[in-house]
Image (cartoon, rainbow, N blue to C red; front, side):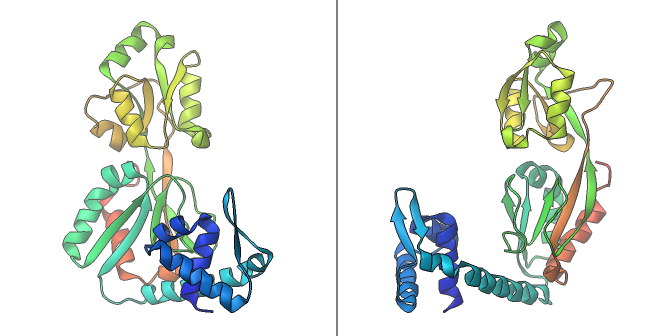
Length: 285
């Protein structure tokens, strides 16, 4: 079987539809259907069946998943090693991190990287979900939790300080009646974050008014008076219309980790980004 066809098979399996698989792979819907049909003709039996919940594997399809994933790992390993041996500083460098971190922390690093190496094109994949470095969702990732995946080279980059913020109106309301202010949180999936517990302990009588996976969205709702928010200081301090509220106790800081797959350790453009990040970002905010 051709790897390109097996890649399509795995994408359909993971997305549950031809349309979504086509979007993820950047090909047309008919191409997906045609290549799956070729695979099924070679196998002599159907690999998927349609249900009300989307496409699901037949027994025959389920029987080749492990072999298909093994082929994927071999192909991705070959791709990573070839990229890791690239001698010229040029090409796309895919970077995974939160949107606020790219905008308020890494943007100057990207600018300097592009100035020193015009052939390098940083591509930021912003989001809160953890990227899969083995599958090359991204080449390098920055995040606030250590990496647990095998074959990942990682280290702590810096310690990020956080602050308590509110609009002038919210700050005044807090001074008059602390229980009347609302609290802006991360969403339920991030409810274990230390800043959520800190806010709840600091304002036990206040009620949650808004939540989001995006720190940037939180900051804008904070500007509009939705409540108090704990934000990374590079974001909160740079957001017009917010006041940082000082107190006896500051919100807990978080370590920021950087990681990449070991097969990419020789990729010059990746190393150039890390060296610039080390030089331009302090270790304590």
